[in-house]
Image (spheres, rainbow, N blue to C red):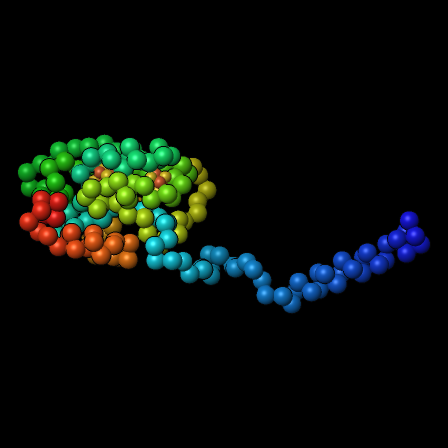
Length: 174
Ligand code: SF4
Ligand code: SF4
């Protein structure tokens, strides 16, 4: 080692210069969750189970989303609709339990593509953080949209899908 290398001073000064330079540079990180980055309207975030125009749950517990899910993150229990529950559930069969394990989910969107009832969509909402594994199993209380707080997924639907939904003579849309 040369004399300068032996006393380490140039290396120490070089390190300080680099640190000071970074103090004045624009940070590439943000103070999440106080600040949030804007994400695309078709960004694949937290799922929503949609209601129809009358407020009834669209999901008919057919299980296609669970079959399509490569992470095996979706589980559900189907139940039959009782008389008088027409306002709650759109079809004769509904999901009495519907759960997504968010720790398994890879946000691929295949559940959304598989659903024939337009019941499940991924949204631009960022998944909240938590401390225990159980809190990441989202049930209907977190997934089904509130009647008075609808979640707009129109940006995720292609014009062809929107046009298809207008055809009320199709049983799919009734
Ligand atoms: S987004 Fe993909 S991984 Fe997540 S629940 Fe849907 S199908 Fe499964
Ligand atoms: S979300 Fe769609 S695909 Fe999944 S069970 Fe309900 S209706 Fe079937």
